[in-house]
Image 1 (cartoon, rainbow, N blue to C red):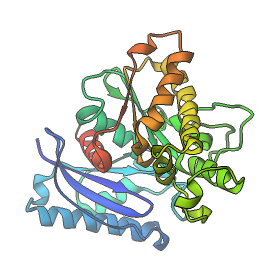
Image 2 (image 1 turned 90 degrees about the vertical axis):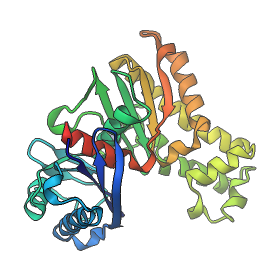
Image 3 (image 1 turned 90 degrees about the horizontal axis):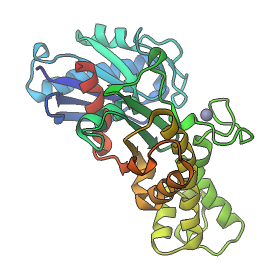
Length: 319
Ligand SMILES: [Zn+2]
């Protein structure tokens, strides 16, 4: 089978990789800044040029490439290959014919898929989800993205919009979420939500090393900095991860009831906190779920790191 190109359209960086779809191996890859402020037309030209550059550098000819998959951070209509809404890119890209445009500029067939659904497919085929028929992925970063594998298929739903697990409501009276709903998981356990808990603790004058670590500049508080404090035994920092893990566990409990997953894979930058986050999440699920065998649900960290998305979207485009 011909190799495919996996491309990641990020708010900051564009990446393109040539993927061996039999093994999931990255054969060659390259990246450039997105320069999203230049607008959608300019960004699409940059994507096409990056793809052509990666093919050139790799020594493959264009006819030896099977096609292109692009992972996109937002709401899409994957059947029409159209972007509907990218919350984190200037202009938000309403009704942008991304697949057609890149097809015209590169001369190769293009499919598009949400970025975390791409990660989900990659982790399922060659990462932490190998060998199971039903799994869920939560990708925790600036927001919380999600994806579902059900009965050995990537679950797509209407236009590929199914799997937005970060918008599972955990408190119907909760704060307004960026999506317009109230009390979504994302408002409680995303990177910014975790950082905000750290800022609040320092601003309240609680006894914690988070203040020293950020040199009392609240803008420098990140989930990674709080994790560092927690690993040194700081109780406030440990409590913050305990709470974030609890919220994830509440959402994961609904997920267990809905799809009976054999695995829940947690990835994204915030997942690097590892057991600090996963243990309280797992504990919460084990205590709260009784309608299915929750002791058989494994909670794991992702295994493919930053490559999960480009691998996944290439494999999915080839499938
Ligand atoms: Zn939401």
